[in-house]
Picture 1 (tube, rainbow, N blue to C red):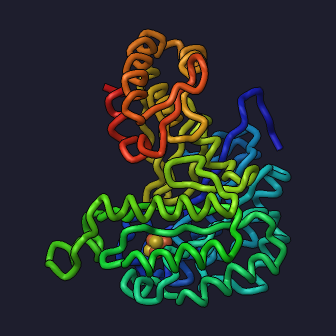
Picture 2: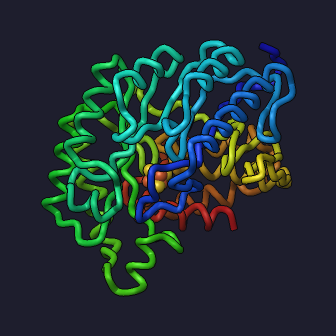
Length: 375
Ligand code: SF4
């Protein structure tokens, strides 16, 4: 593998295929894509990964730099044959610190799990979203709650010691008791990592259309927040702490890929719809098999990287930010004043001289805090 003196990179590979489209989903993915197209796509991904070690990488790749995390996401990666993809990762990067694959319950078979272990995958993130069959059906998820539970047990039985799943809070009509049941069943699975996302009504989705036509009534924000709080409390009881607005993990099981990105590291994005960030360069994989490239100014880049740290439990250290991104130095006094003004309101805490973290209440208004600092 070719290396240079650059810092380590993180690689995200996007697989834009799904069995069918879930009602709430606006991610870059499509259902019903023929197998021949998926096979050709996986072959292209293999070629691009191989390109990293020969400096022929696609527009989204930082060539010749060491990688320490790889994340195959989607979409539904398992709708492609992942064996050659895993082999290409191993050949190009050797053993990486963390190699995650996203799976859906319907994908999971003992042979797939064996192939992934054989291929060097050491972390599984499964899409569950709910453990209420009525909610799953309404969401358009092609699995039952029992199938999701069985799939998670199969992941453990295959030997994955680092595994978790996603849940979505706030599906219209979800009752407190249905959500409580989902959370209790989720905790009983003893996951290492859980992401709890508040439902977003993305324009153009089945959910959005149903709300517009009055067939579904969205839950109010307070009800969604209280569902999120209930999940946070239950997850804390089984030892999963919040380390980002929507993410909870046992100590040491935080997603390293995401942590690296959130701490401001570079990442390469391969495939249709994958985003990449290398220095000032931003890339997005297009559907023609290429990469659209744009450049940020040094200040835009630094702001993006620095402000995201407020979404994490480790928070933002103003001295560290000023040292890392001198171009932001003149903003630090204003940021300190702004963050200090939030302390009496219980939104932020000053945990050491120059480090501020948002409180649980602060996470609820995180986007507003970040946009004030960015302004
Ligand atoms: S499986 Fe995941 S990516 Fe595919 S439509 Fe459903 S939520 Fe979206």
